[in-house]
Length: 76
Image (cartoon, rainbow, N blue to C red):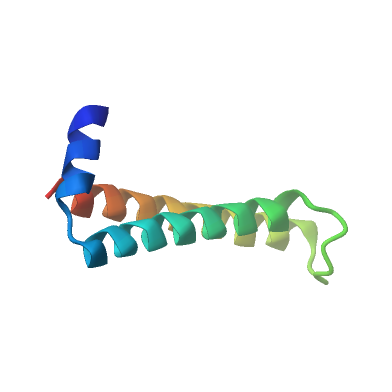
């Protein structure tokens, strides 16, 4: 499977590879931001803990949706 993904990555044009890397970067940004909001206590957000966890969880779910869409578009 990994070999197939690498072979598929090499067949893509420069623009498609750039967009794939950009998609992976934004997936990681949303994931890390969600984790930071949930678990970093000194983050200067004036929110109650339940809202911080809800917002962080929402960002993590959004990053998972982006990752699944990225994987599905890469399989084509």
